[in-house]
Amino acid sequence: MQQPTTTAHGLTVIHLAAWTGNLDIMRKLVKAGADQKAKNEEEMNALHFAAQNNSVKITDYFLQDLHLTDLNKPDGNGRKPFLLAAERGHADMINNLIALNLFTTEKDKEGNTALHLAAKNGHSEAVVILLKHWDEVNDFNQNGETPFYLSVERGNEKCAELLLEAGSNIDVLTHNNSNALQAAIQNGHQSLVTFLIDKNIDLVPKPEQKNSPLHLAVISNHLLIMKKLLEANHDINFLNHRHETPLHLAADVGNVEMVEVLLKAGCDLKITDRHGRTALAVASRSNYALIVDMIIKAERHYAMEQAHLGHGDSWSDSDLSFKQDHSTRTKQLRSSLWNLAYNHLKRQEWKILALFWKFTDEQIKAIEEQWTGKKSYKEHGHRMLLIWLHGTLLAHQNPVKHIFKDLVEAGFQHLAEKIRTESSTDMESRKCEIS
Image (tube, rainbow, N blue to C red; front, side, top):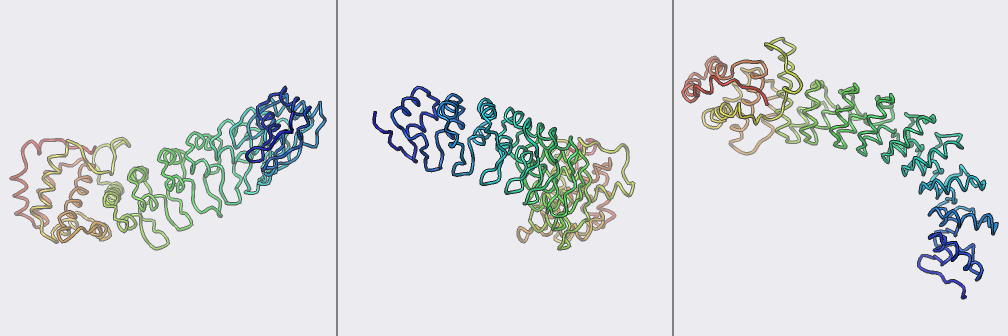
């Protein structure tokens, strides 16, 4: 038989035999004089390939029959066969190498141990085996990542649970000042976020961390994780390195659903960032009219609550909403308000009404910021009227009765008469609710 030739990437047939685990072919190749210590371009020899592909018989043949223990060397990535077996999660191979006294806690070129690699790739059976022989579970790789951190980052909950039970530090920071909770949030691992919270991970970021977990949930657009953090009593008004609340961030990117959750949770709407801007000002400058209106609705609603102006029972979370109203119950009334804004109110008159209804200067300015042309005032007036309607309904007041009375008191007697004429009896008797 001829000497085996080298194939692509420096592989020889002896490498391929080790890869496939074909012991008969391997014996024939060795008998024919094949180079048993040949390496490919990545400096992997036959023992590396055997370990990587769980070829236990090939491993035993090389180590016990041929006594080639000098094949137990690092490959081009600094990984000995034991690390390659752990990376692939080959429990049989790991046990076999341990029995052959080839267990090692040595690290590869990236500072990863066998435990790092098994945890990173979600091999819980391998992690169980390794932990029986491991002394330091909080060992760092070159990035300052522990096996526990890597298991969480990759979404491997079972491995994370095993490592935590073995004494892993749940709050340890990497060299990039990230911890396990931040890794779970940024990668959208909702079940792991729940797991970490249940294990009492610290929700308060360290001084060197730029954002809180809640900020990261907003940045990563993970609504369900954000809700979970709020359920766990995460500080809704926590300030990041730019003195921004999570609401500032949600308003800046125009995330309606997240803004809704934060507003309903009762976040502080008066906090300003390092530039002196409230979340309302941020939304206004970003030209998100829907969010501007939502924040104004919330400001007026909570101001009303503080002033004890509400009547009847408070609204439940399922009833309370600051989003745009599309309900059929308010359709006719909303149509009348549209008519009032677009066909009757003159350029500055919507502001007079807004001031009468105690809209603040900042709220009026925020509405005006969304300029769409010379007739923008019509849209501004319409938005203001819908915000007023929202508050009126939350206060369990009759909007038809109030719009007529308020127009008269604000000096718009002629408009009040038009509204009375145009409003149907059905609309007056309809009981409106926020959708």
